[in-house]
Image (cartoon, rainbow, N blue to C red):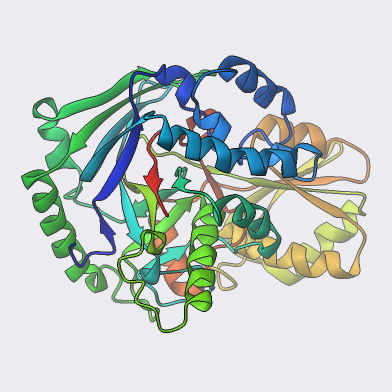
Length: 415
C-alpha cells in the first residue's frame, strides 16, 4: 500500500442488479420529509438496494430505529453470502455526476486512513472536519456501523487542487477505462457514470497525490496553523463515526497490530473544491420568539463595523443591511453565529437554519422573528478558515441541494 492518506481499495459493486434501485441518497437528507423515504422504500421493496443497508436520519428516535438497525447488518451479510457483489481489488472508481444544471461534478472513490484524520477542532491532522462535530449524532451511527460487515460512503472529501492536477489526467483517458455503471439516479438525482481505475493508472494517480501532498505547506504561508491535505466537505459525522469505531477497536485490543485492519480505513469520494460543478450555497439564520429590535441593536453594538461583510436582515415589514466586523472572524457566518450563540444564552429566541432565500424571507415576515441572509462563502475561504480557526462554524455552507448529495453506490468490507 502507498504511503498517502488516500489510497485504492477493494471496492464492492452490485452485479446484475437494477442500479436505479440500488443507489439511494445520503441518509442525512430529507430528514423532515418522511414521505421521501416512504417512496424510496416502496420503490426498492423486495430487491437488493443500499436502502436496506442504511438508516435514514428521518427514522432516528422513532419505533423503526432499533428494528432497522438490526436488519441492516443481516441484509449486509445476506448480500455478501448470496453473491450480490463483485469485488474490484486495489482500485479507485472515477465518478462523473451530471446535475440538473447540466454541469458534471467529478470525483474519485477510494479510502482514507483514519489515523490521518481527526475531527477535533484545532487538530493538525492531514485530514480535518470542516464543521464542529455534534457528539449526540455519533452514537446512533456507531450502533449501525460497529457490527456491520460493509460500509457504504456518502462522504465527500475535498482537495485544494487549484491546478486540477489530481483528477484531470484520469478524466482525459476515461474512454480507455472500464465503465462499471452508467444510469439515472432515482428521485431526480441526475445521472452518474463510474469508471474503474486500476493497475498503472492507480500508480500514476498515487504519484500525483504524493507530489501534491509534498507541497501542501506552500499553499497558505501567511497562516500559522498546520497545513492540511484534505477537508471533509460533506458527511463529517459519518467519517467521525468510522473514526470512533476504529478507536473503540484499538481500545479493545491494546498492543495489537491493527495497521492492516480494514476498520482503519473508510471509503470516501475525493473531489476538487475548485470544480465548477461543486456549488457552495449559504445557510441562512432565522431567530423566532425574540425581540427583533433588541437583537438587532445588540448585533450592531457587538459585532458590526462601518465596513465589512454585508449582511441583509428582515423582520416583519422592515429590512436593511448591516456590516459584520471582519476582525472577529474571516467568515461572515463566523461573526454572526458567534454573536447569536452568545446572545441567545441570555435572551429569548430559537434559531433555525434555512437553505432557501425565499423561505428565509417568508419566515422572517412572521411576528417576533428576524432573519439574516448570509452571503455565499468563497471556496477559497474553506481551507483558510479551517487552518486558521480549527473548524468552521456549524451550518456554514451546503454543497448543493439535497438531490445533489452523494448517493450510496460503492461499498467496502470492514470486517
